[in-house]
Image 1 (spheres, rainbow, N blue to C red):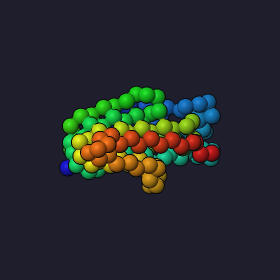
Image 2 (cartoon, rainbow, N blue to C red):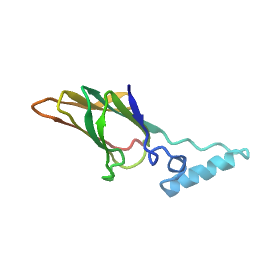
Image 3 (cartoon, one colour):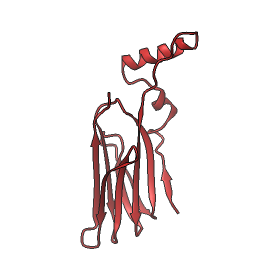
Length: 139
């Protein structure tokens, strides 16, 4: 059975609503004013990030979806496993790290906007697969 995790801090309503810079604050103020008859501000585009692990379990997984070193670790995970979240496309460099440790074959995959950014497989001889992806902001 697939296990789906969405860490609370990734997609919390407060995190999704909080403007990251003064320009976004102005955009949100413009959006509020648009309700009063002025043109609406453009919404911030987001990137859809998916983390997937397939293969033979159980596995241990460590992953960082914030690029800040705040690592989540899960042990004895049955496969397949996945997590997904959205990241503001205009934010600074985003780094995603996913480490899988298994005694059998397991594959980690990071997908950004439906395209595979990286995919690695562990084996009995090399029991760790590391998927590391980074991308720059869009303008």
